[in-house]
Image (cartoon, rainbow, N blue to C red; front, side, top):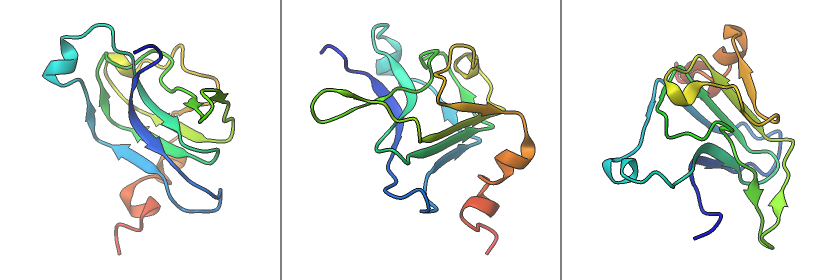
Length: 130
């Protein structure tokens, strides 16, 4: 079908103050055998599901299935693009052909600062040391 695509994530947050989000750290993002055989399926790291969506992908291996734009806008209920310039999308120290950030959408971020990335580790994001 026209305009269909895959997304790895679709995170929803109703309020900016909510401490929620999706963090993929030390993951492998690649195609299944069935998807590998298809060369006409566009795949993105994620898309917003509302204006406060938050997703971080860090220290992961991303294979070449990811579209160079990385992220895609949410298509709303009236089949209109919902331009969400308030979602928080961050990439940090990823590897692989799909981790090349040249060509990413302008509303997503890439950082090389470990202090920023540390906010999204298990210890800090979900108090994983408690």
